[in-house]
Amino acid sequence: MAQASPQSPATEGVIDLLGVLAYGELTAFDRLAVDARLAPTIAGRAALADMAVAELSHFRRLAGRLQELGVDPEAAMRPFIAPLDAFHDSTRPANWLESLVKAYVGDGIAADFYREIAGVLDDSTRDLILDALSDTGHAEFVVREVRAAIAADPSQAGRLALWARRLVGEALSQAQRVAADRDALIMLLVQGSGDITGIAALIKRVTSAHAVRLTELGLSA
Amino acid sequence: MAQASPQSPATEGVIDLLGVLAYGELTAFDRLAVDARLAPTIAGRAALADMAVAELSHFRRLAGRLQELGVDPEAAMRPFIAPLDAFHDSTRPANWLESLVKAYVGDGIAADFYREIAGVLDDSTRDLILDALSDTGHAEFVVREVRAAIAADPSQAGRLALWARRLVGEALSQAQRVAADRDALIMLLVQGSGDITGIAALIKRVTSAHAVRLTELGLSA
Image (cartoon, rainbow over all chains, first blue to last red):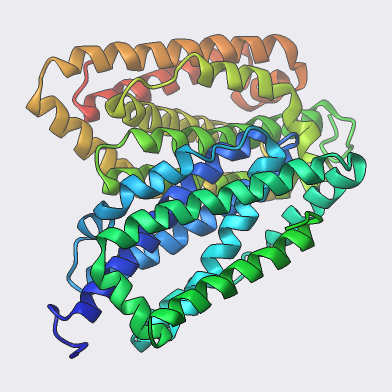
């Protein structure tokens, strides 16, 4: 499979990957910006707004990479608009704590996934993606806020754990929808993880990293 | 009037000024981020998101300056939350063109006002504010989009001109509400413009710059 040819499945897969990540970042920007309004303090609102800004800068880099590849970013993102919008529409946080958990869990799963797929990419796409991962330093803020809220009212823990489970459930259901449709993207992942059982192992690693994050937040997985 | 004393009206006025500008930028961030969703294209959405990011960076600098002055940014912003939220609540854009006109007009009036008041400030606050003004380069995008929309459908011009008039009306009504309440801020402006007739002249200059901007957009003032 020649990676250099623009028609090869690997390249199609990379374009799909950049497209889904780019739209994911753009939509993360506007959801975080909206959710920032749920903050009880201006400091909290500014912290979530800063996370939103970091996502937009990732979006810019991913869209720029698509342009370098001679691909219209809008066309590359189009197949992923409906599933990503559906994910966000089905997981609108009802309050500040839910928005924090969503930001933390979403960011974490995205980062894990980025790291998992980095290995199958050409050098320059990989560098771009790993760079986009550089910690924006807001995770600490989220952990502190959520743990403080649970300390003040332990009944929050169970409710938020359920919320985190729902987030993952909705994300997986949209991911399946994407997988059913995008052969080149799936081939890229299969190629990256060795074979089809590699994908199962990948999902298992991402899921167990998610469980670790929930524990950090003070929630049971 | 000793500007150095933290109790002097001038310093109280500067704190008020930084507070209202900071909250104005924070709220501009989240309204622009929300309005970005009205864009018909991803390029338009990203352009408005970039404007939102620029506002958040201004917010950060203004809040940082308040901290340097030993003032809690949240306390400085508090008196201005209700009037600024009321302004935005009463001017929610119904569509993409309204959101572009609001972004352009709002940004323009804020920039004019920043320039007008820069003269009364201490050097470091003035530099900060003039720096926050540096064109983010998105105005051109807005002008192009609005002019293209009017060229395609000339009936938009009258409707958008009315919308721009409503924006200014709502802004003035909230500004009056603030003025009635914040003596130190008004004293700062009076001091800056010479006397009370200077304020009338300031309002006239800002209003006529607004008319010029409307003409640039292809709207009659």
